Figure 1 (cartoon, rainbow, N blue to C red):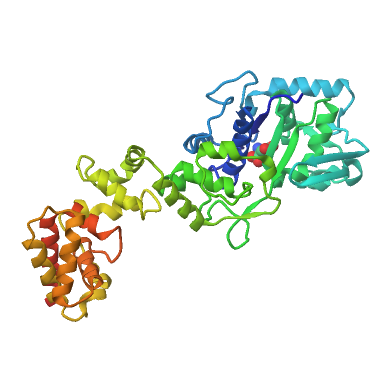
Figure 2 (figure 1 turned 90 degrees about the vertical axis):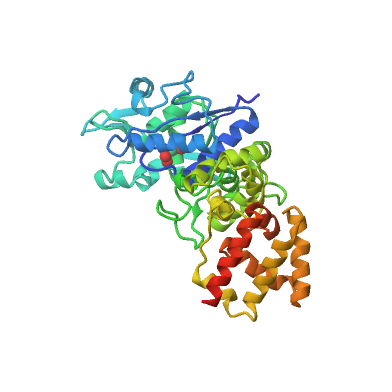
Length: 456
Ligand code: GLU
């Protein structure tokens, strides 16, 4: 029987949580949740010069925002800690002693401890990338390590502890995976070339190999390598721009994984249910910001009204939309049919709550030259003013229909001027419910203001 699944996300805290790392974290998280296993967060902070506290915090809060709660790690604790590599030196010393007593290491002339590369084929079976075998001694470990190439080009034996006593990444990475009983190493394809060395270390330490799954790269839409500054790269940008974490998870999951059918919209719970490592694609993925926006809109439309209100709040406050206005829930329902992000919401509903609207010149230009435009607006104004019915979308419609008939134009010819007058915009949510929410008096005032502008 195989042991219970334990996956880990092992970030080096040197920058933001990038979309590529978030995807690695998500696949580890989903695989653990899908199998009822354990998701571990381990901070690979051995490079003191490059690690920052700000980056560490950004990674934690990014994961938290995305809803990836880790079972073991910083804050969560667990039986295999500490979960910061900078605090695990004693453990590394123990594993090094094991390699010493089994004769796998020696100290070189410079005082560094080296691991004797086995002079035989090391085989990596990767769930996604397939199988490769390599004789590391023959190739020389230098082939895989640019840093070593500079210093000691001819020695294929891997330095695992520098002369100053610090350990190198490959050793601590493997020791931690052994010590934390990690069963699945799911990480970016950029680590695939390191994996034969890791396998050699696992074997020397007589530890069972985990299952390796290296995820193909994620590229920009144009096929270039994605960098920190590219659109969609930093998770904090999604938070600021009004994305829902469920949509971002959904989007990131689809960057390199596909379910068996063509479905695309998944809640976090559905992702957990559907995610299979076997569904990870073998080719590189391409980032598509438009698709991410579209998915976010779909997630917005699926929120229950209370959650929609809750998530919108910071964005509403930011734009001075009154939270206690009784029209707000209906306004949110209306706008979400068209919004893609939470930050679209206040923009779209502002005319409902503002005292007046501004009309940009180019919007005005859409109607200013139209035949008899002030006559049309006047006709509409009078029909709205004369009606004694309650001001509801259902009752407003026949007023527009009747005005169109008596003015001998199509209903559509009245809708655009009416929208521009009432909202200052040429597009937006359904006009009739919008007019209802703006209120009769304000609509009448705004039509009058627009007529004034048009005759000037
Ligand atoms: N600390 C490594 C990185 O951030 C992770 C290596 C691994 O997942 O094994 O790329």
